[in-house]
Image 1 (cartoon, rainbow, N blue to C red):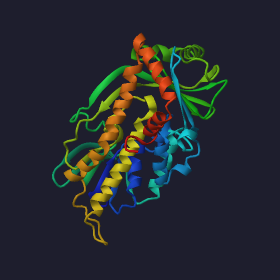
Image 2 (cartoon, helix red, strand yellow):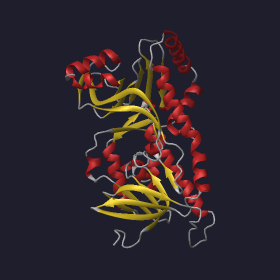
Image 3 (cartoon, rainbow, N blue to C red):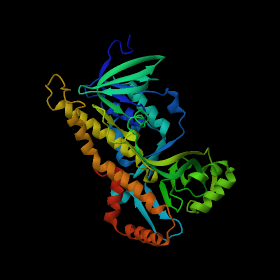
Image 4 (cartoon, rainbow, N blue to C red):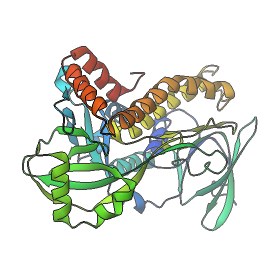
Length: 400
């Protein structure tokens, strides 16, 4: 017997119940379509996740449309972004008030966002199956058959559109991604200091890579880019040594660093999936692209993927629909998927070029480049229209 009461079919199956997959399910909850969300992890995993997320003002608007923003009760706004280069006079400052928006972005706990998305899903008619590990996708001209394991048993689900939002692990063997390894890792930790500017984010470029301080609670979330070979040594430092080294590396713009929480790390790579050749299948979020965290574009790009896919799906089923029934003939069709890819190409490509270009341009200590970068920062700070253009792209993407 199927876990879906003998209903082995749905219009749309979303594989991956993280923020991107959950957001898509919520965006489709009033579409009239049968949507099933398959998530491999147990519910407790989100609660235990210590990460903080940096999201843009544009992402806030999407989350508000999904009905979850107001329920998140631990949010630190970013109203100013201070961008500088170590050992250089160059700097530029982006301010929300100059763009007529209340904030440029926000920092919030990953687990609280995930929690509110799950609460909203539970209040909807979306079917969600936790502990369902998908092992195979087989597509043809009619749709996709999904094979998964749940509670020790193997089952299948047929769907007209399979959305892979699991981070990309499912298809890596059959659709290996294009990967550029930066040879770097990001060390993540919560820090406190003597002179916090708690609505200002700092992005400081150094020869070893960028250092970001994101205002959060009583201090900052630190994202320190380091050479891969140095990671373990830095993780092994005692707290006093770590803070002293950070002080020397970042400077005293926020005063003296006082404390550091648990340190974690992850390797930094640019990963982009090839064009998916499985019929009736689309990739979202990190399954489609994983970016360097500089400028904090990864999750925001994924959320824009979600919103555009939901609009594309709605157009495809409304186009020939009667006043009584939706027409799902075009759901997952090559034409529908091409429409979605076309709508996202500019924003995806620009996001990848922007973050990759920043890393390649600034992660070196070449003298000629250093003076040119410093001059560019100073020029940018004195060109309001150009600053607005850059800030709008950071908040809303290239289609914004």
